[in-house]
Image (cartoon, rainbow, N blue to C red; front, side):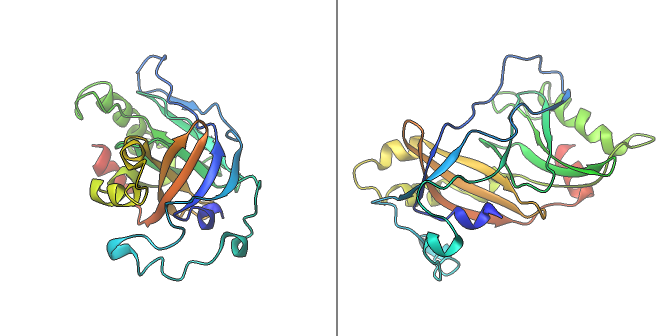
Length: 237
């Protein structure tokens, strides 16, 4: 599983996909357009954001971090993953087929997994940050997705999910960015939250910092306890 690669201070060459906004925001559930995603290549350790321990209360969690090579991560190695698009006003999904899934960037959308027709799927419920929470298109996309599990003959089951953006607060993000004495202002402005769903349904919220064109520094990753089907449906309600 690629969760072991996303440790604070590791850097990657990656042309991160952008959100898709030029579609009707009608709540439609659609197949994602990236499988696999753009190549993500390990590019070594950052010179300022220190590999391993994170500041503050998270330091103990990461205190025993081992070098990237001990995880099988070597220079110029590609990280294998499937990407799920963020489609504003729609839910995009991928059938994962036993591969780890990345998606983003996150500001409050729910990332969900479910079973349908004997297959496992990961989806990105594409709410829109600039719109009211309980009005279209946000109410439309959330209700349309929830109906898969609440109708008279639900087509899907075993729903689980999480809100990756809720795992980090601004103080934690700023603390990581300030390890760079010269670029921390730009780093804070270019810090993004990415979601990782592993092949065995472990959920992670990954802090990624864009330091240059197609160059990203990992600011750390937090494993998040997901909600069960009832919890997800309450959150989307």
